[in-house]
Image (tube, rainbow over all chains, first blue to last red; front, side, top):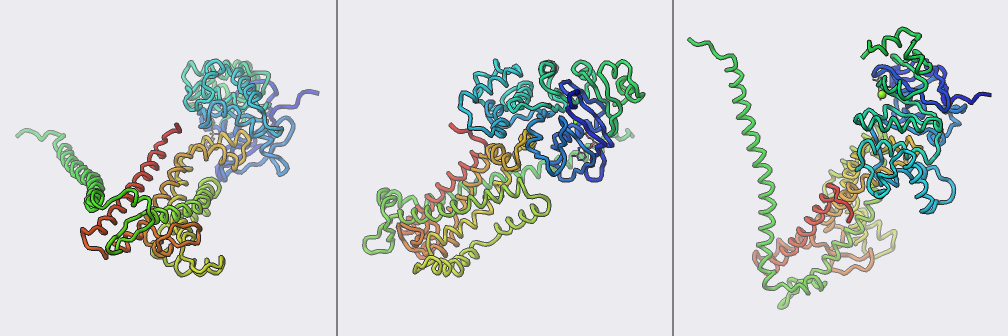
Length: 256
Length: 306
Ligand SMILES: Nc1ncnc2c1ncn2[C@@H]1O[C@H](COP(=O)(O)OP(=O)(O)O)[C@@H](O)[C@H]1O
Ligand SMILES: [Mg+2]
């Protein structure tokens, strides 16, 4: 039997108050791959991404219909533990948002939340921190200042740290909302490379408005327009031979 | 006749704006400078009135070490402020102890959990609480808390540290709540979002992210509450029992620095030793509240540990 899809939505609709932002979205995101989500500004990319860990619910006025499954388990419903859902789904935001704690405490934050076993020893924690920071290629730069506050890092380093802090709880899915848009070209390149090294170990869903980035950095690509999913195929096919004329128009730059 | 330059009108208006600008700037500057002048003026006045005492009759050992405040005893008046300092300190200390948990709790609830109408109603209520005049609080202390304390604890008098401390706590709580709430509000929402996305509950986010991030502002809230307690006069005068005592339990009556000045200043001859001693008490109060406010200000500016 094939792996269950990492994410599967069915007839998913979302309203902000009375404004409908998503219409009947059916999308199946393959496990272990990088899927990019493209589309013009305001088409609902962030909204869809943020529905998958239900962080949209922070706003009291959001209402949804339809279903979302993550690795075969429904994430919406009275029997679902939101904490468990968010434990297996990591999110990276558009603006790097490390917590105003030390670098070390940032990496350990999620891990401490979810650790149900006995309290880890200092050495075990050190191990976790080192491994996470090594994975995001930040260890050498930060190993001598783990106790310093994370907000003193450069934006590129902050964004890497925001990825690193997700890893100790071993999520299976990483949601990234334009993770490079606040970075300079050099930082963008570094973070893109990092995302590529995470490929395979994690399923990654990556929102981007940068088509070159989608093309470079993803296996699959989904195009959204005005709250609907228009086309979803392998990145190569989508860019070389789009099926829907609207997709073609977009990748040729005919929408803003 | 030469045509009027097209920008003539525009430059007229600029002139008017310019005068208004200058005028307003002048008024605002006078306002700002006068605040400084008043502060310095008050400080100079208090100091001048109290100064002769500092050089003539003043004995630091007696002032800070003796509880005997007997300014009217003839022929040997003594000016020991220890009991008054202890009175103020004990009442303020109890006030802070009782106000901090409530204020922080209220601020956390209003800033982090309450939504919509509940939040608005609570904020208005807290502000209303802050608007109650201190003499009304004193009245509550005298006529409600007093019999209540006597009945509950079976003590002869209910005008004591406990009474004044609780009243003062109630008075300081709204200020602490409002400032603490501002401090929590100032924590960027991105932090909360990051925490929640990692699977933290609202409570975990509050405890592990928001409170540490707001700690300087919260510290300032507590300090300003302390400052409020220190300077309060009328309510303390009415609720504390106003008798000179080194308190050993919350049921002892005490007398506060402020209340002493308020009660005695009107009955002293201007320039007398007693009068000057009262001004020395004023200098002490001034120094303490000034330090507290300065400390609060430094906390707000985010002075780091160490
Ligand atoms: N918090 C919100 N409240 C109301 N409307 C929102 C909110 N966030 C987004 N929207 C609206 O939903 C639509 C989709 O937004 P978004 O998902 O952020 O688009 P994208 O990420 O593709 O640029 C937009 O029209 C936007 O105005
Ligand atoms: Mg977006």
